[in-house]
Image (cartoon, rainbow, N blue to C red):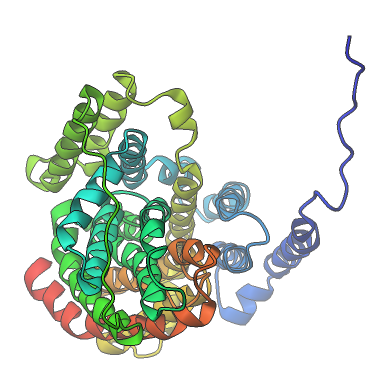
Length: 467
């Protein structure tokens, strides 16, 4: 019989010291600022608006400095909305119930993302993602420029439907045998390594499920009564995605020249598809087509996303272990951001802030301001956190709100100058093949080009041909 071993004692080495040091003082001073009436008097706010502002600032600090996991911030937001903001709204006669703050965590957009995660898990479990990648790369030949373009197009395509983080990891695994055949110190090796995370970042623009900022944008627009279909989003974002991919390709070849290099691909798996693989491929294609035509058949993309979830788990193609491994943290991050926006809107704080924005009714000034904020903030913090902070403010604008929200969402995904800017950048940096300085130059250039394109051509194209 084994001797009883007591659980290990908690020590400062295995506790989150930042949580203990920073959160209690933040909460104390936040409550003090509201309960003393300081914010109401200093900023001419109502009590609910003061509470909503404090929750916004608290969420922003937690998202920027990451003293606690990003998904946990969503629960902090929800807790204070329910126990602090809801009673304050009820005291002023607002008929707001707690259910309104709970619903964002299982909204149609969260269901859409969940469906995307399940499809991505199925593609990965049955190695269909690798088959797609190898098939596309085999079409590129052995010239380095076309090989790089093949990697970029493949990475971008897969990132439209899968997590761009998972795509980056997989594409790096495919690329490593190729890098071994490049002479040590050859500049093209770094260019090829950079092409994957950058293309994965840009690929996220292409579909509503490509990256969390897209889902956040769609959800806020839906709350305002503005419905953007799957096909509309793709028509709005794909031209920008392809233009930026082409510009990034040429830029990387300019910075990291090929110098007469010739490459050869390792052979891919050519065995026939199994029955399970054929079923997964059929479900994937059916879901994508259904998403694309959702706006025409009168069923939301969130509702349609339930179909692949039921089929894949019902047929046993995916197991309970796969369900547990889905990116639940991302879903809760998205839900928390939407929940924050509900509080800002219900309290009237978003409208109050919009009234104070410089530029007044000058739409161009507002557009430039939000575009710059999105680009700069995302360089130094999570693109999800940036979207969660900026989109709730933009949603209360009086004119062409969908243009501003789309601009924010897209620029949140095209700021990629540092390893911390996006998860694909972090994975590429962690491979040991790249240094931070390698990302800065092409990353800054593409961020600036994206901002210029969305502010000029993008705004005109969206307003005249999409919305």
